[in-house]
Amino acid sequence: MLQNVYASASSLRDHDHRGQFMNDNPALAAALIVFIGAAAQWFSWWLKLPAILLLLIAGLAIGPGLHLFSPDDMFGDLLFPFVSLGVAVILFEGSLTLRFSEIRGHGQIVTRLVTLGAGVTIVVAALGAWMLGLLSFEVAFLFGALVSVTGPTVIIPILRSVGLTRNAANVLRWEGVIIDPLGALAAVVIFQFVAVDTADPGNFILIAEIFAAGVALGAGAGYAFGWLLRRHVMPDYLHNVIALALVLAVFVGANEIAHESGLLAVTVMGIFLANMRDVDVEDILDFKESLTILLTSILFVVLAARLPTDAFTANWTMVAALMGIILFVARPLSVLVSTAGTSMPWAERAVLSWIAPRGIVAAAVSGLFAIQLDRAGVEGAQTLVALTFTVIVTTVLLQSLTARPLARLLGVADPEPRGLLIVGGNPVAHAIADSLKKLDFDVILADTSWNETRKARMGGLRTFFGNIVSDDADRRLDLVGIGQLLALSTRAPLNTLACLRYAREFGSGSVFRIRVADQAENVAAIEGRLLFKEDTTYEALEQKLAEGWQIKMTKLTDEYGFQKMLEQQGGEGIPLYAVSRDNVVYPFAEDRTFKAGPGWQVANLVRPAEEAATPEASAAERAKSHLQTESPPKLPD
Image (cartoon, one colour):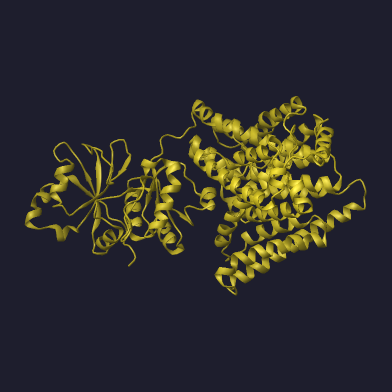
């Protein structure tokens, strides 16, 4: 059986001489691991692939592939605490994203998928692994819990490349966001029963102690830290450092009180903190996201390097059968149960049944559990990791390649996205966003100022409150139907970063940025095409809006074309964007050429009508029938 193969491979690993190149120089090894992890993240972003794929490939290459690195030989007894602390931080960061209001707020199908559907997946995957003889009954259920988790880091890149309809895409996206911490919690709970011999009735008391210690310490630490944040007793610059220190302290302290309760404690702590009223954890989440990227990059390379050479080839017929059960039985049955009695079309249900890639939580937690189970003498620890990694690679690769053709075949692929993402909550961004919304375009306005975001939301705009280039934006920002970026922030570096980030999302020809005073102009094209006239800066537009200038829509005809419109404005008006007859937005930019013909509409920033009524403007009065005026709501001073 696979267990015997992995046990023999693991014992041989302690006696061979692989890994000497990196192991003989720990400083070099550490630097190379960090570099390899960062490079894998970068290339995955460039290729629009989930980072986990390249991280696993890198780890397998330097470990069992080329024998350049052996984590067990290099770290020795420090490997377990290093991996444990890293996974603790990852689980805490994931649990910080779980808000109970989101489970209730995203529909019946999402709620069922992350509860009833996840339970179906756990049971079917577990029974499959057990009946095929790959894992013992207890470890099989732990495997089932691990492979029930999709996660935003793998689902979102696939969704962005597929272009599903809004309904199906939102269900999959929110399932990944919510099930990430829930699945981790389920895996941690099941692990307690696997790690403790339940055949001894006395051990149920030990399990109860583990749960009591984990829940009590986690909830207590979460409430205490939230209380401190709510009362502002700590300086802002220490929030992230103290949060990290507290997570590590809670993890270690819980393990000291009740062995193996640390992961449960940090998960409960994050969930408790995320759901406290009047507690802002966004800054902490931003910091933890960056730290999590670094930790996952390192952990995945290290954990993949530990796998035996034949991890993916031993007993491959049984492994292939298990993959078939997970892909064609577990997931479809989960979706069928979760969508029963709903109005979701069968084509969308079919797409949901196919798209369910596994990701970060499954890989990181399985690697840690394998080390713990090995130390506890539980059979099948290495098999657990190998099977989990096989599921990850199979689902990510197979579904990345086939999801879009399937969506097109079933008719659930979204048409060409025509919405716009606008960066900035200032008066200029708000006015342009409002004018687009009045034309029935899908617009999202993003800003880091709560006040500006709230004003836009009160005006009826869709908003995103947070850093537009953060992992939180990747996880929570709904870009279904969005195809262009207008970077209108007053912060030139943010505009540049936003254009760099979303050039890969929308294409370099669909990201635009506004000029900001004193900004260098020798910027690469990928950093955003310059908007509007050569001498038009953000400050100039803001000043004109403050003076009462308005955005007016002009409809072009055969008699009243674009050039005639410019002449009537006396050279003062500023064309902002044009809308074609097939309802596509074309922002005016320095390097952009398009022909706005009859039937098009052009948005111009022009003087108020009473100021423009001069003798020279008499021709404009004669063309009044061609103008359709739409003024934005009154802007704050």
